Image (tube, rainbow, N blue to C red; front, top):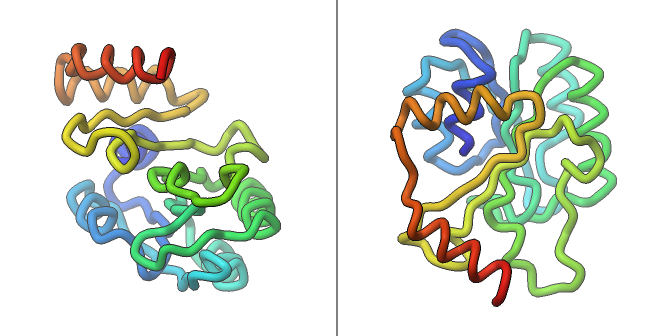
Length: 178
């Protein structure tokens, strides 16, 4: 989902902000797409440093920002709600797309589930999967992409021609009926 979104948004040579440390596959993905990585420090208690991000946005031409706001990998941190709000505002002010990976959001032990940054702005591109909560082997993910929906769908079709319908149908049945 993140890869398709980056392919829809970016061109080789574009700069993408990532948290540091970040999920190692993001780094491999960005490199394979010919994208420049701009690492911005993150902590488990606050998420991506908004001060460092502000400086990065003022100093570089950035196309997108990829973050895991809920239970980041590898830090495991939960970005506070006020930081999520400021992250959305800051990126919107600079015209930078926010790609939010919420693959771990359902793993919360607390109720209610922590909200995503997309709850603040429907322009945030939200990616997730059932791999951490339902069935790792199914490899079924999704993207709430708004205006990029058709382009991501086209790229998905080009990449795989078809999807695994039986596993998608099984997950749909489970979600509908438990």
